[in-house]
Length: 399
Ligand SMILES: Cc1cc2nc3c(=O)[nH]c(=O)nc-3n(C[C@H](O)[C@H](O)[C@H](O)COP(=O)(O)OP(=O)(O)OC[C@H]3O[C@@H](n4cnc5c(N)ncnc54)[C@H](O)[C@@H]3O)c2cc1C
Image (cartoon, rainbow, N blue to C red):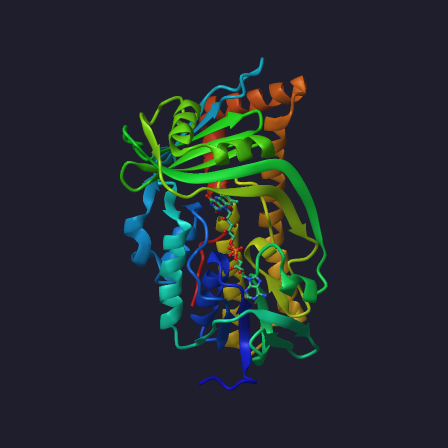
């Protein structure tokens, strides 16, 4: 039984994949932690291509062994210009062997990843779970007072705001956010296919956004199909047979016959970036800290780096006896996360704009860039390494 007015070193608000990872990582440092998150089945069929240090982090959190068998390794990434425009980019193929890796990463259904994270979170004695929602967050001088919908009160020296796009924590910290709605919507679904995917992920660049086919275990793939909103709605309303046929056509039949599985979801796309990543004892994690279109599989990979960096700051605070929500440490978190988030958001935005643009010089620039990456080995290898994780970053260390 938890004291209704308990004080914690860290309270994490929000139990999506980023919040769960942040809660586990923080609890593994020995800090007293709480997680305020409704316990409910994961609600959509998105998958995540876990890249760079994400798998290492999940291994350190003792999560990866619980879901490794449910993930498909990604060995090759193909970028195919399917714009049909006058100036087209050549196909670019990235191979993990070229940069000495066994795989770029692994693709896994979010519901399976979240189940593994939930299982690990439930084991940690330093992590108190409130199956609830935060109703009010009040940052004060020495702590943050939190009240839940079910009337529980607690306080925290540091709050990790992992409460997604409409973050209450962000608002409570007085952090404003720059937001731009994109006139694009992503349709997601999974499917079975008749030809093996050979662990190749293929991204078709269309004039309304990318359409990406990413391997899942067995003869299955997940798809993120970005198009203009009306077209996404049209695809959403197709019968299973019609959507299977449309996906087969869009994939140029590289996977043979396609049979879509039940379940489709639409995600209107936007770009969001808060002015600060930490303020008034609140540090932002996951989509509360960055929303980007699904290009290059970056969103949750950044969210996991948020979790790892925050936990590292908490660990050092615990070791030195410093207040984990001190202004000095919040500034450090902001400075640590800013270059990664800002540079990736910019690169993703540019890549997306270059697809949508009918402006001939922009198309030429894009085609030339892809040509250079495709034909110059060192440039290609640099692009691969940067696509996985920022090169300046040292490996995650948690607990
Ligand atoms: C189509 C698509 C494909 C993508 N593919 C990839 C990919 O391949 N690789 C990749 O890295 N990223 C990908 N992303 C991005 C990735 O899905 C997101 O970054 C990630 O799911 C965000 O997780 P989160 O935990 O930050 O947010 P969420 O999953 O939104 O979790 C926030 C949680 O907080 C809860 N919450 C809100 N308010 C409160 C409150 N007051 N109290 C308690 N709880 C609260 C919500 O209920 C929710 O459970 C993709 C995104 C899209 C749209």
